Image (cartoon, rainbow, N blue to C red):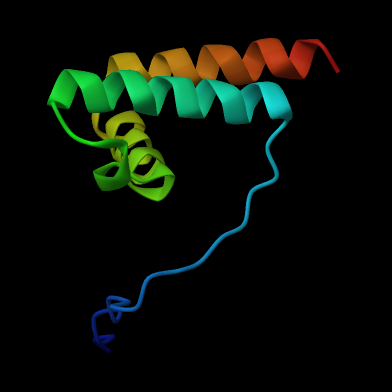
Length: 79
């Protein structure tokens, strides 16, 4: 029996993330540097856009994924 292909969700999924103040500052500093590098005003480089791009980078690149996994391991060891 053939199953129909799964539907691809078209509507974005909203998530909420609580960040430590240091992580929030790091995100903003990184975004500011990226805006300068890309020659964009900060108003054109939203935090959501930065986070979505970071997710895609971690999913697409083994080196980036490895760095994320290493950070998660270190965080886990500190708990």
